Amino acid sequence: MLLLKIGDLSISSTCKTLHHLSTNVTSRRTTDASRGFEKLSIPFHNPIPGDPHTYSYFLYTPSQTLCTTTHFRQLWGSDHDAPPDPPSPFLFRVDGATGCDCTKGCNDDDFCPCLNLECGMSCKCDSLCGNRVTQCGVNLRLKIVKHEKKGWASMRWS
Image 1: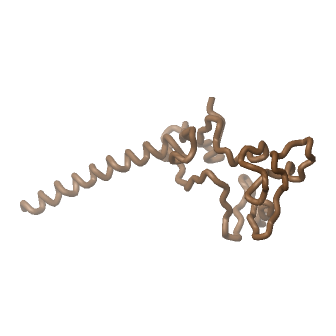
Image 2: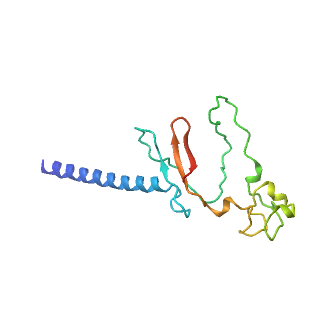
Image 3: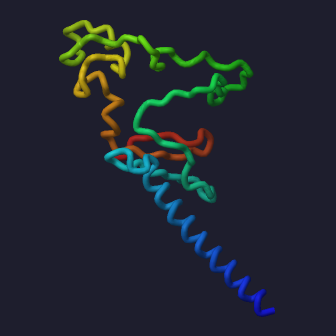
């Protein structure tokens, strides 16, 4: 009987500890989706009453990543069984791929061919090039908000 009570106390203590840890993890994830990778935190906001999901779990990366699987997901609000068109091939880094030859940065005056696309890993321009917008990190306050019908989306936070 005494062992049973000690066992019960131990389980209760473990549950409280796990609850405390879970609360801390949830709080950290809710306040910054980027997990510290960006200068500005990106908080989650769920205005839906009674919804227990305070954040959406995903792995954030400050750099561009590409899906390695070949399956495509159905578009939002679409009832079609056919997969959407595959993603644009300019996102893929391919051995031997070439980028722009601009060394002073890309601008309209140079008629740079890369102005149609964002400069990337294969371009010769430096990190200060004005055509490397997404590679400079988040510079606006953003938040991730849950919409009742559409799910999670990023929005500018003023």
